Image (cartoon, rainbow, N blue to C red; front, top):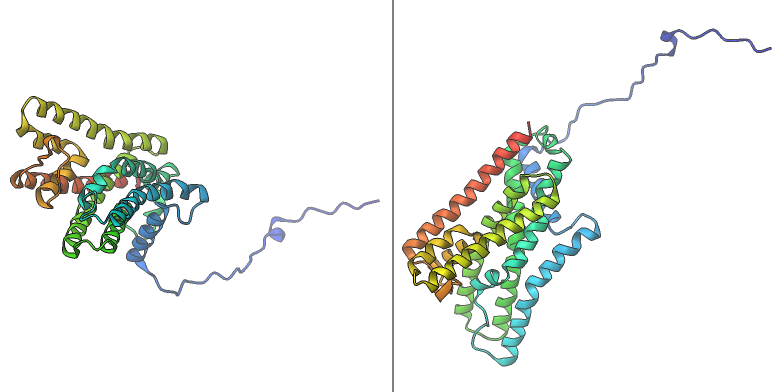
Length: 301
């Protein structure tokens, strides 16, 4: 017959384990290291690096789409022994603006929306990192990723022009002007796309909103400019260009970088009006940064 054991007292069941907690004695890398890590992680993520194979497909395809036309132009210039490239360095990004918009629509929401959707933003700010550090890292990463996308085909054009033995001084000048143009474009477009994407944690809404802001604004401004040109109101064309991101960049580079304008009639803004374009572009970039900072101060509480 089994003998029932008396229940053990609570004190007899309690045990204390010494699991050896020790203070951290290693280096404390601080905010700068956290900011650099967030930047590099976001930049790699914009091309799917460090993520699944499916995440790499679209950015790599769009990168190839940006570079293949440049390679074809170089091949034509070398084969035909042309005296110049078929397209100016400053015009290339304008011609392929649809690809740029698709890239931003795909990657800007991925850069910011996931942290909002999974509510991980407060975790960043529980470490030695400020709201401004987070926004700077994300902004710089998106702008850098877009600069790589837009500058790579210009490099292909430049190398091809040198192989075709075109004038070194002219090609170097054009290449430098193109780099200035796409750097300004990268800052402006990235800021706008990040602000639009940060409004909602839903990536699908962010994609649609970025495409709408970048493409609809350009279509509307171009249509109104064409109407103004047909009616003879040529003075209004340059001022209408202030209301679309792509026409802003077009106006700046045609006013100060010697680019051929895509405005109706081929006449871009004058130098005086171009100063207004520069002020508007810089104000928009600063405004996008400020809007992102206010957004993450709100959600990071």
